[in-house]
Length: 390
Image (cartoon, rainbow, N blue to C red; front, top):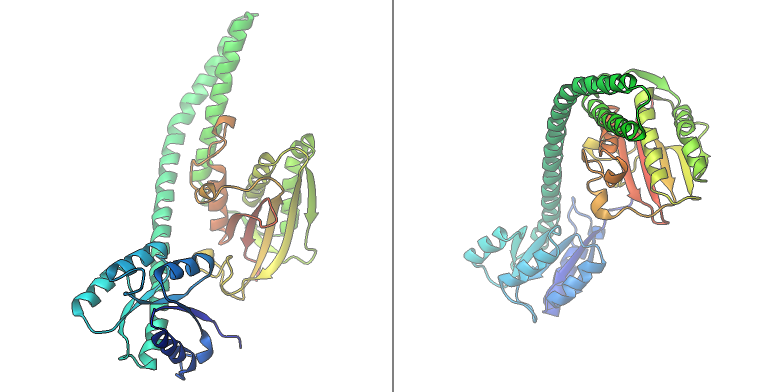
């Protein structure tokens, strides 16, 4: 069985002390900790430590506060500023209660006295520091998720109220425009233009209202066992004309043995049409769109699934639909907000910022997962992960 490797960086200018720590980590035999679980690297200066964490992943840092290029609490503060997510265990030559409290308040995970810590204490401090830091990060992530979920609920309630309040007046205005258009027999060109502009404005407002209602009414789903490939084919047919007008090629790679899924067909089609349209709009003319389906088991530590809110666990089968294009990458600051309600980069082209929010809400209701990311080979991929039928 392959063991997880913990990369420990020892930042200590006393070479003998550093090598002793490394030996304790790599040769100790404790039942719950394998000696093969550690890889140790060494740095003698703060600058060297910062350079290493900038280019290589480090799980935990053992830090001597007094280095040739930095001393005291400043060493910890500077390193924490450079690597806030990496747990740090402070090493010191003598016990100082005030210093111990200060370093813990400054974000260190533990405080050890050099020469007084046996291999068991050192190993457990390293392992527990890593686990505590992971637990802290998980807690922050869950808190952020809860805040986002509450925000989505609030926006949904607001959207529903606003949409219903606006829809009836819009209908009355549209009826008035139609009446005036009929009333004026043979209106001059300027009157015609004004009437059409008024009608277009009302239709635009009605489109926004419908988006708000879609966003706020994702409750009842008509769930049926379905072949996902068929839903994708129907979705492609709906957007094919727009693609052909811009000479965008569509390549499909459907898995003939794809497991069935239990979904609301029309809602998932709505998701796919939105993703296909976004992909088309983000590409220059003459590019290529690829639509692919396959089944895969979620791997432990994978960037997809394995977390509770993703509805998937390691080893579980997922049914995947990928829509990828050869257009430009999406800037990271946009990716971070891409599913937020009313967030859009297409405001001047009539975008409401609700399409991807609605898509995510639909997929969430199906206990699925949606991811949008830049591909290493170029272009953007949107992937939808759904639960197969048992």
